[in-house]
View 1 (cartoon, helix red, strand yellow):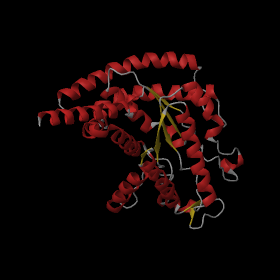
View 2 (cartoon, one colour):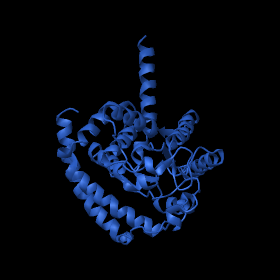
View 3 (cartoon, rainbow, N blue to C red):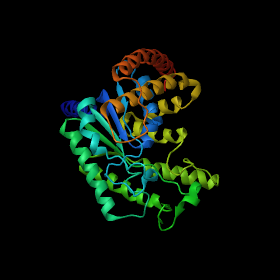
View 4 (tube, rainbow, N blue to C red):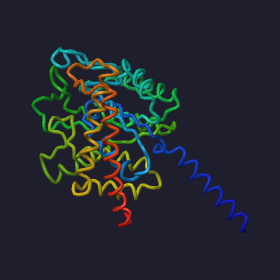
Length: 329
């Protein structure tokens, strides 16, 4: 009996070790890709703040290279941006990004722009799937891991004058969120093939509907697309919760604590400052097809400044971490 218990204990320990080794949090260099929602950076900064506080002895590199207007499908609607430029295609820059950044983990959020704000279309859907699969293949070919995020919810309520039930020219499709739901369902279905997928869309939609039932007129996105900073907490909490595994309860306790500005405002300001100038510098240095982007600092100068800020971040994060541990979060 004792030998069986010892064997079982050994097996369980081995399983935990393998799980830890395969955890996304074992990566130190983490790259975020996406469109303007990712470029806004709030959920990325919240995620980076969590890592700094929860793992004060680790030196994570979190880089946000989201690009406004971008698609993973390579599609663009006629007259995008009043005809000034077509939507950038991720695959135009992807190889350069991966070669330069050399990420160990990629977190990618696409879909919002890929349906082109029109009714569901099989050809557009196929282009989205192909683009996601190409992205995944490029990342895994360099022995990096990838987490896919489903697109956030589209909200037609606050922009009724800009939507149309049939998606008429110059208008966004009123039920475009149904299109995003189908894109999200396909991504979630890939879990059966071992894909790591975090379903932002379903969670955001559920919370939005619940809030609106209690507060008519409530919205997370005044323009229907770009969520508020508060809504980004939904994304970061879903991401942290999913990758935490068996540690989810403690991870959520930390995230709820960090949502309190009294606890994290100063730290998050530093994390955001570091993230902003690194984003601008890297995007400009690697190159892209999106006009109107900030040039930022030269990359070497941005890295030096980031290193200086990282020391401040580590000190503040260590204080919060120690205080949290003493309260037995």
